[in-house]
Length: 345
Image (cartoon, rainbow, N blue to C red; front, side, top):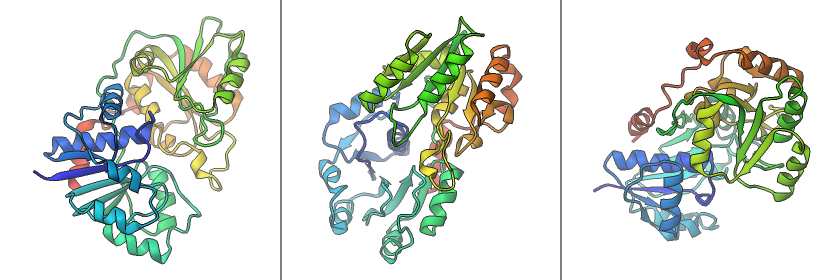
């Protein structure tokens, strides 16, 4: 049987990039490949695939790949990947030297000002069949930086997300991190505190991976006395339930950021927004980055705090059916993802 390899150094985190890479593994397995993961702990892989509802049935480990990711010798990774028919590799901004028969390089971050078009990178890119990215926003940045023509392969929505009866919940999902991958939970807390005077029965729930503890404590202090709940490292089942019950979904990544100078600090795509829409939540997201590829009407986009507050008051009285025709996420399926990936092989 043909063999495929998934390479990511971040598989001990619960994030969009990790889900993307493991979904590539699921897709390749469904296409008949024996899938290996460049990791050293099978239990952790089984746990994360279960938590993320990824149907990867028979993963095999290739531990040496994990330790070669940050190795300074490109030749070592080239030789280690030679046995594989397909290699899908998550880039940290650098270009690896890969030895698989078909090599796909995934860039989930809009890397810029990293010397992408250097001669060394151009030579290593000759081993890469295609660079895949998560959005047209990311594509525009990295294509300009590295000089290639990347392929947009949108991440799919998990199949276990369901619409439920809606409660008076505003949900926001994103890692609790104040410096990189910034989700601006502080902005949302301040907005909700002002909004709560008019919406006393509503609750703001912030869910995400645990980043810096000091940041979480600062947010808890800001939220004290208000109907605001922080759920760092919540169980995936809890998140799925909240998606189903939340009437409104907020997202603030990119607020206050100069998108031209710091594209890495706005939302690169925004799979949590797609997941919320799939669960029947009305999104109200910051107008920047990849979010505008998902939400295409200004009625559901915001740029200033008073705009977020005013539009939320409108959505409180709205129904999902009012916006359903312009919030079509039916194409973000695992089957569509698998079909698109297969065409690259």
